[in-house]
Image 1 (cartoon, helix red, strand yellow):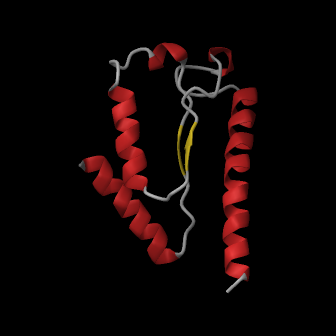
Image 2 (spheres, rainbow, N blue to C red; image 1 turned 60 degrees about the vertical axis):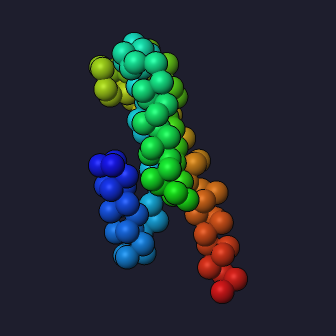
Length: 105
């Protein structure tokens, strides 16, 4: 319930102020992913996606190999560049579609 409530607050805020909202989860090391009990992460992801509704969501959980992490949470320079490019590539078609829709009005 908390996740759903908090994500709805973000969606409401973005809508109120005309902000485009994109949500993504960050890459995780392989051994960190293995710490989750079976099915737990998938259940969480289902709750998040459901609560986000039509909000674009980018799942980067398995995006980087372990060697592109500087420490347990932060990517190396190369890893950060890859993540940034992936986020930009993800956002661009959504932004283009939104611009096209606003041009038709």
